[in-house]
Length: 259
Ligand SMILES: [Zn+2]
Image (cartoon, rainbow, N blue to C red):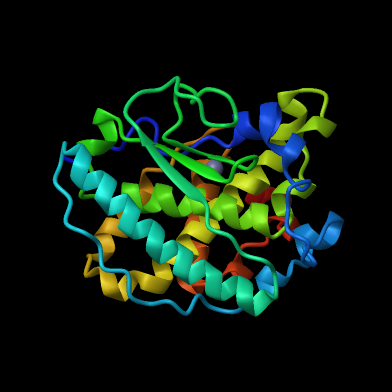
């Protein structure tokens, strides 16, 4: 019996409202990173076609084993770096690698405040660091596609940061969290799609069954910050099928698809 994780999707909410975007953008490279509406709906990264990096063999991972999961994520990070670096070159946008820190309990400092309860992983735009919680819950299912999917999602936020998307959607412009949610959902659903694009592009090299991906699709559940389960699955699948960021313009999508 497969039991979906309670906290599968990760939170960028805290980072964007409390620390992230205040510094995001200011520290960016001198390259022509788009801003404003162009960053959201006409981003050069959307026009880079399919991700071309195809070989990302997964490292062996054991259930309930912290060390093998850590190594697994580090290898995966290397694949993500190589894949997305090519895409940024095609888009003529500056690229830099994010950092990765794995933690075993909540409350650790991330650069965007303390790691919040309920999140599986967090990307902090201020220091471009992915903090990944290797909790007993996720370690118990480490052979499933969850580690892979969540990591690719967090990397999606890094892609948004480098391409000017994260800096354009500024949480500080909104009077409270509720007012910000519609824009936040576009960010989160886009990260899902970018995650799907990467998974789809390397799928053949994983040697997994289609049901492994379906299991992750079906594990989505409604949240105010990430949207309805059906939409989460829609964007993840859309990215997976099209294998590139061109599938992922949530900012031009009909409202019903980003609810
Ligand atoms: Zn996220």
